[in-house]
Image 1 (spheres, one colour):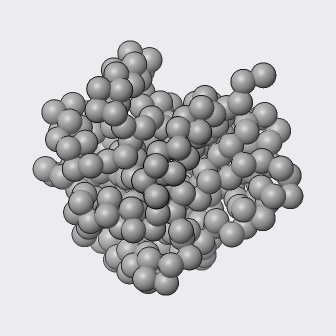
Image 2 (cartoon, one colour; image 1 turned 135 degrees about the vertical axis):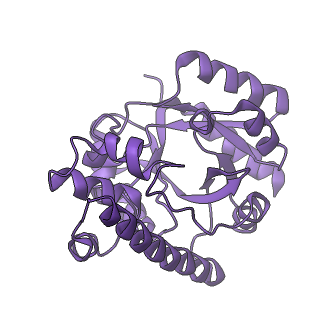
Length: 275
């Protein structure tokens, strides 16, 4: 049987609903050979994940998902194989999460102005470990019966450019790439199709990304092939995964988008050559 990986997963430490241990156990049950948890702006779940991976005998790669912006677009950047225990990095992540809470409260206020009042204290209390964000708000609005679906929350209120969206204060693309490289890791441009602008994707890759997430549950097959061709032409790595958030996005589950384990091998070879 060919070995497969899912390299884009989220746990309760950001905006997922599964613990790292639950994710690892599900991955093992689904016959995945390797996974990475890429929580937003936090690495708090990685120690638990490595422990669980060792106990159940599945390969685990340290990961994170960081945000930046470019030409008015929110850009997500995946970091793999990072040395996540560096003190300066942990301090930087804390500042990111503090900024997330400020942004969260600004969006709470905007939603209230639109007649959508949420119990923000309950959201914070129910997610004590999380790097709080938009998905937590969307889930709360849906559970309180204020909207018919989480998707509608993003389409009408919290999606980029919508009435209750609040932009983040981010590092530049170059700063994020350099930070990941300083941690000994690989920088991967996340779900480029969601950016909805291929000219911007091309410009972003000029910043020196190590790779591109060609395979994603929101990428049509033709798009995956196109990005795979781009990666080959540029001599950069390929990555991919389900972008699973657990029950928060029920259609995006662990293992629904898999990539050949050979991509992990190529990542390791790339890092060996760099070192």
